[in-house]
Image 1: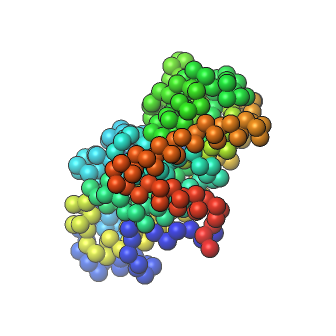
Image 2: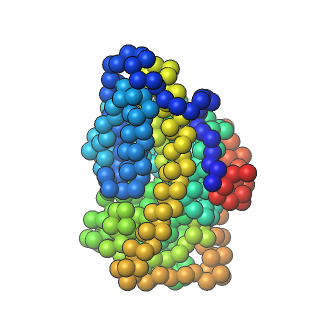
Image 3: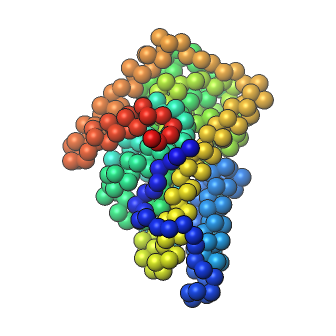
Length: 338
């Protein structure tokens, strides 16, 4: 399956750095990631780092700091910009208001799967190159499959959402509020305990989360709300000064490997969604399908979110309407590029 060819990346020939050709000094870098080490996306990131080391003939050695052990999820972007870590992966949504244009990637527009969401996110970031990313070097982005509602109590109609306390972040918090629920902001690492203790009664998330973060153990119902499927776009970034100091042939390897890992992350999201569904079924949790009339009501309920996004971008002289149109057009193309 063909995937997007890159993000902020110049074209380069495949290959790597010939061993012994350049300085043998090892470049040591730190990589902050909020996923736990066993999560499929942390595994993919670790494999990316290993591939960088391999293709640079050992000249680059990247130390992984998973589970927010170096910087917490919401601190990761600024942590990279300020040099606390050299590399970082986290969600744009965890810093609400910091990325006004890219909030459009997370809108509830009916993403069908993670590969599509990842492809669309890279196309959009590459096309618009927003100023809100100028403090870092963007290597690539990826995004999960459609968000669903996982709850401790059944939700079969829009009325059942009233006052339901739902864990949500960024624009997904607005989705919860538009549906009549009460949003409570928190990152994934905090959610298991919050669900267990009843601090929240539900979570809006991709279904993979129910296995990847073990949250399926804390809920009883999975509601298929993919009709308003949103995503959460995630960045893989590098400190600008560290990037600029890399030899050009090392930069080329980073760009080459990053292009390849766009598709790997998208496919990993879809694989994780399938595994998450099976995990929850194994726990005998109940799946609830919304009727067509309910789906239409949910779509209508979140429509003002899209309209408000466009209005807010317009007030800041940002091309929100154009970005949203591009997102919807790319989703309509499906999960593969022409």
